Image 1 (cartoon, rainbow, N blue to C red):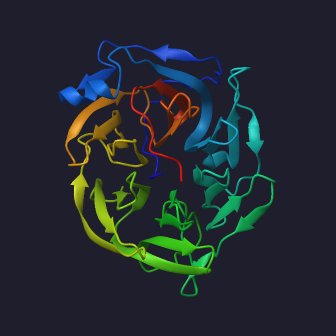
Image 2: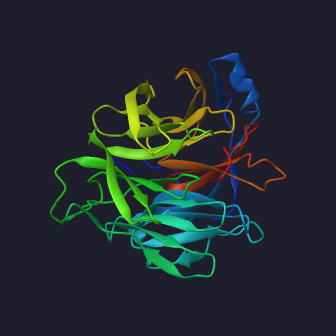
Image 3: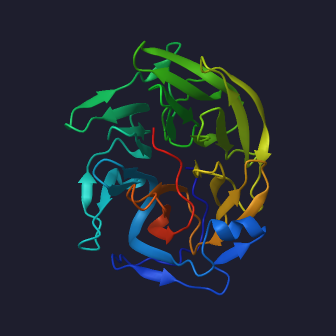
Length: 316
């Protein structure tokens, strides 16, 4: 999440009935291969609205359900397709921002109100990870990625500091190994590190910077989890990249000022999906049988879904 700019929100009434935002150019094709990722007649469905600031979309691959945060209201909601409603699922939530489920059903949450990352296991037990590095408290953990070796990677910009004093001298990206209990700063040259995701083979790590650069960088990941490279991968032409995800083919899907912009592994923009509110984050969902082809978007006061052709990257 980046600081909310004044904007005219298109949907202000609390509405839990799904609707479709249909424009002649909901899908903008910039390269032919985009037609293989998003249907030309794709609809942007509004699932729920009336929230303060939605973030942290996450799909549970074990029990097949979708959750999201309203971090400014200190709640996590769970979408119920049977009743077409989104009741409160967790309160308080530690003002959680980014959320992520792994393949075992563990929920990792960036609790920026408590300036730490937590994991909630399927049995309901919860564990807090360290809330500091080198004796200094984290600022406000923002978004998260989990590698197949169990390491937890997260960004720590200052956006959720509030009135607390900033202790870290830089805005970093961290890697924590729950097995060895070792916390490392793996990136210290960011202005506002935000969304992050691994390529399907986990050999690359993409990190969005919503500070002044407004771009996405790409790093090579070694077998011992060291990062190298870090050049600019792409830059949305509208707004800033915030939440990002890879699909199974390695394309990068990024929130942007006008909706969702999709880039191929070479950093070329393939096309975009226009959304009536600026999305802060996104994730793929859906059952394994469907190939996780539902794209969920959290966008300020509302939550949306788009049925796409691309499949989300495998859940680790």
